[in-house]
Length: 128
Image 1 (cartoon, rainbow, N blue to C red):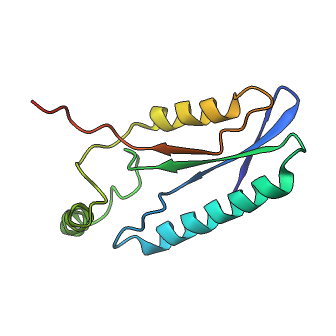
Image 2 (image 1 turned 135 degrees about the vertical axis):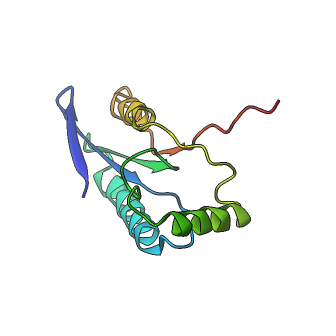
């Protein structure tokens, strides 16, 4: 569901969505995220000029409780398939604070500016 935030007397509508690239073994959440993003693009067009700004944040993997109870073998197969298809270059995960910072960036954009989309991915390990 969308989250409505009020900043400086104006409503700012922002949603957190998944990547446009679908991943194997999580098709339900990926397709739902694509639908939410399509809704956000439509809302942005309909609300343009009203003071309501719509931003989407495409998040890569975030270290949360989601998936913690999953079977370890399933997780290994899933991550291996993502890497094979180029969807997960490394095993890095972002902290929730990184996502929060991106949300704050979108929500606090100055009047007259709308950050339409933020693609947020974890930084991979440094090469030696």
